[in-house]
Image (cartoon, rainbow, N blue to C red; front, side, top):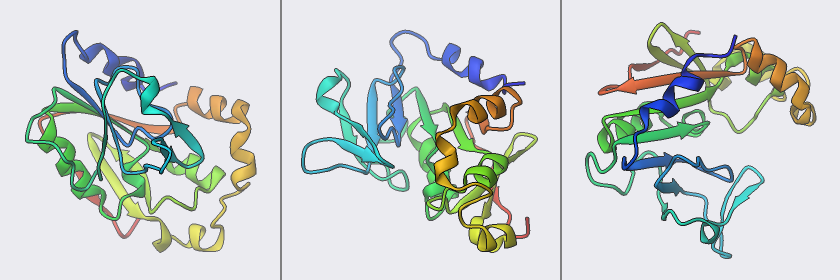
Length: 192
């Protein structure tokens, strides 16, 4: 069963709200009023993991910035969207504090441990799970499986098989979804 947060978070965004998409990469949210990513090329495009987003094709502003030091004032936004970004950061807890700083609520989406094990994204620094309302990050390289299988069970070529991704998503195993208000409950667990 898909996580209920997938359907819930867009309903939290009301007309006129200032919405930031942090780490929009090549697939920005249509709900955002401002896009932010640190990947920027000389052609004026946002690039991340092979996807390209041309801000000139969108009416919303694009701001170059790092999620661990967002270039926005406190509470500049009403809502923050952060999909598939925190697992890449040197310190995901710093990223969480920055999201809290710039908005009072938001939506976080992360790859699940199962999807990471199957597809083996070597660019992920952290394995992500949810323990009740707590996001838990474990260092990927500290886990024996990932040291021995850096490409996961099947490697990147398998990641293009959308039927498997959809099956995992329908089973609620593809991603970790988290809606937060006020504070993001998160911790690092080096033992898991």
